[in-house]
Amino acid sequence: MTGRRALIVRGGWDGHHPVAATDMFRPFLTENGFEVRVEESNEVYADAAVMAETDLVVQAVTMSSISDAAVKGLRAAVEAGTGLAGWHGGIADSYRGSSDYLQLVGGQFATHPGRHPDERPGDERDNYLDHTIEITDLGRRHEITAGVDDFVLHTEQYWVLHDDLIDVLATTTHPTQDYHPWHRPIVSPAVWTRLWGAGRVFVATPGHTPEVLADPHVRTIVERGLLWAARTP
Image (cartoon, rainbow, N blue to C red; front, side, top):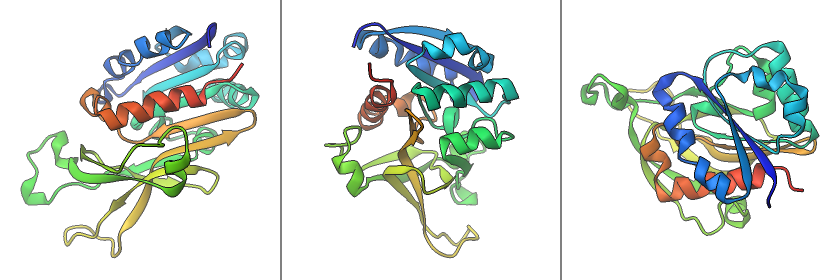
């Protein structure tokens, strides 16, 4: 496993702590034989030489934008075998204006339903809910989530729009509430993988803060997902 290269691309909205969150996983990558490079701009994706020698992209860029050249470069690299991995808004709420990026990832944040209006303190906790991450039958057999039991988090619960080309390893269910307008429970993917050409994509929607990423279940899933997505020599 020695000699592989990981590229961390981070930035966008500061509320997802892109620096602190990605720094949590740098020692893990190094311990697993990766030379780690960090970029604060996604324009690195347009550098074909850099991308060709990159085995894993760890992206933590919430919202923001991406140039045509950069998204083309990212898509080409993944199709050729570069892995793409990330968590929460750093990968599932990136580059809302790029349909090519959304197609690559296969799932997009739509909202995170909030608490009852009478229980909202007026900050980011307005959207913190107790919810369960449920491992699917596929997830119980998959190397990323095997041995991980269903678990409960108190944080943002992502409602995700997605397609059928993803392999869902875990889900979360948004219940009906008298203060929400939908009429039946909605199941969203919470952890998924995607095969794209010769490359692999890994997404985990938990990860709003470093504290959530430090949850043993979440951290295990993310660490395994990074290794799974990386190009295999």
